[in-house]
Image (tube, rainbow, N blue to C red; front, top):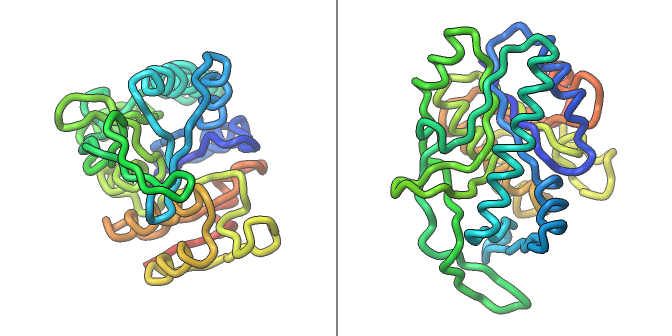
Length: 266
């Protein structure tokens, strides 16, 4: 079993990803993002994205109630439907789900969000974000066993019944555990994890689990921090291998399975 997480950043070639998915013969689950599309539509709707940074250096999207509505519209509506449409065209019997459906992704809403802004520590209390703690594996196996291909997007559902924005890479790690996946592929708009974010030739081809924290502190920038954190969580949950692959190139999944990108093991 393989779980594939494709990001939604600018530069990722979604057609390449979906065409390669359609060629695979192993059972698969797809988790997707839509960050660039969300940024564009948020701007058009007069609610530009606000990115905030935690005291530990992790970047996330500030998600108030209005932002959450736009998030759901883009992720669960436009992008998820377009992916399912494309896969159906390619002969894959895809079914689109958000993490809210059937409590597919479940977790705790953060009561407060601590951030650093302009050098000052602040606390946000009207934020709808959280962290996925469990996935509904029974629902996913029901779909897989009956010939359906799950296409999953955030948000998740909180224990209190609220939709919450969650990190897709970390959600993919929990899903991989729930379906007993032996491999998790995380595709982004880089060749993998780079020692120097501005130099694509600085790819780090191999990491082991105990090197991840140091890699986050020394080399990781921006979203890559959470991708490495998701990789670490997946390994801790029992996934055998996590591969950070390039979602811009033809055959990105096949390339990752050949070991191209950054291969992370226990």
